[in-house]
Image (tube, rainbow, N blue to C red):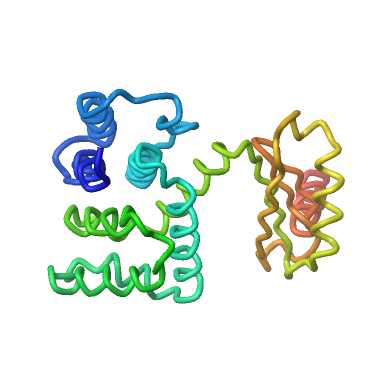
Length: 232
């Protein structure tokens, strides 16, 4: 199946004609009609919402055209563009965008992707988002596609939130300690995702899978305040 055909059929769910759940089901039926879906093309985890629907459809299209890794690198590049330019998300969500504006946006984003997208999968994806007035979900789709690729590679995310950026030595020590713990199953790879949130004031909040270890100063202060209130 060609990239264009795979994407055009998969992303018809973008038009606001039915609830998200029904549109997701329509995507699956379209793929089932177009070509048999093998284990390698099926998203490894279920995602929800408009962004999850698009990320899952893109994963299937990329898997069927054997372009998962190039597409993943391209979306990582686009994700970095969003982080570098916070205003980009607002631009993509502007209801006043016309056909010419969208074409220019696709061209500019395509320049960032460059040779990472030799088959044109991402370019076709961007065009489909534009045609369906869904460019505003692109940033979130990039994130959700990363979740799918992590599951595909057998990775498990270790999200470490601190009040200030942590140095690489500290992150490496955390990674080493968690890797040896029961939190990481056999055959799983640990992927460290550092985040900064000044509101925690100090300490760390460590998230792995569905577990959260809150060692932040703000958490300790909240517990102390609660004890004081309960004693009054």
